[in-house]
Length: 606
Image 1 (spheres, rainbow, N blue to C red):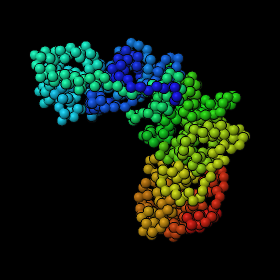
Image 2: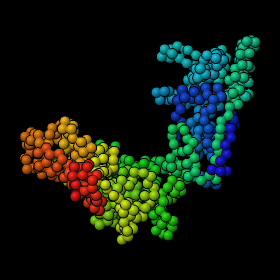
Image 3: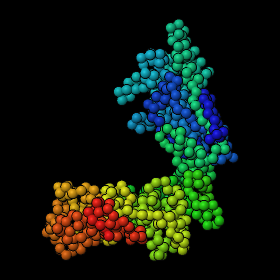
Image 4: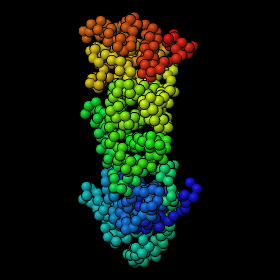
């Protein structure tokens, strides 16, 4: 960062006075203050023991600086000043310290069970001076009326509601610790209360020297970024130093930036997200599993940046890009210009995915691929419904899935694919994802769980082929997909395969799996295929001819199932699945008869 930041230890007393005046404020990231009563006590204990409580990060602020945020005063501060400094990291620590040790109002906090309470904090002088007492046990929090009750409020355990009672109980009020005049007056009253007893005077002198002075002189390391720091650097530095568990996202930075123009980005996004869920869910009761439930607020901003930069590029501007620094440059006017059309682009993308037989978020191969897809639909609008164009979008989509191209850092791929797809649709060359996608046949053997994008992709292609339920003959389209609890199940059942000691790499792979209704899977159980087919015919009154037809729609050789011929079934089904993948990617699959193929599958696949 060079000269764009400075670091030094700063007295807490100085920071608190600046907070009270409003010289130090918070960027309005809309994060609530959430520290509970016990955590505040622990923080006070650390300060009184001169233990470190972590560095703070400040940003010099002026309306003309690189970063323009909406700001707000700390909870409890009167704030009569425009801020000169914003706190990027340390909000919760400084809010706790300010309210417990500086503000005269009761501290709004929570119990360990998350119940909202108001508290004042005291130091128990006797316990503070007892070397065997843990300091946190010497910090007492009392209710807003300063009376601690028990027995359902009937008995008073501790009454600190008057200065006299504070003195009588040897309880020093922490909210005057940084006010030298008030602290001196309290000491005078305390000593007077005990008639200037020499023992009390000596004890208080020790308390003052060992406890109050360390608190009053306590310093914290402060890293201050200059007002010339670029916005992307603010975000990056925050991510590097933040240890509080809540990271500052691109969305939060832009929320605070737009708020400076009185635009509430978070509310706008919540309204749009609700619409995305409603439009992409299969039913009202299934909104949690809606395809677009995986779209995050930052995804949406990334997509808007892509869309904006696409139009800049075609008008002769710089290249398409959507890295963090590009997203952070997004202006409110640009957001407002593209947010509606992009919302519709995401909805179109969800409709397209349903046509590909991807019905829910759980079955979505890559949530990341939704970002460029929504942008492509936003650019094409109604053109995307032309069959030749939709075919190209489909090819690109499946190349991304089976080429497994969207698993890593994707910003460059998003940009290349958006520009590349529009060029291809307009008569140019295929985009990078289509050109480079390659499916290795042995990959079928390692597709063992639904965690893999390609695994989910194969299931979608089987559904897209029009596979029918073994018993009812119902098509597994979206009207019955959820109602029947459709899921992926073994064709040669697991128990049967284990009993026969078949190779698990084969029987547990995607080749031996298919979508089935839950009821059908229960009937199949762990029986040999020849047995469960007879059981289906007898118990469910399915005609043998019809049953054979239903099974064939899953790209399964019926004779191999009726003869329990696993090896023949396995090779034939692998060939069929590779055929579906090749067709979806619009390119041939090579290496179908190499040594690795014969070793893995038990024969060639050509």
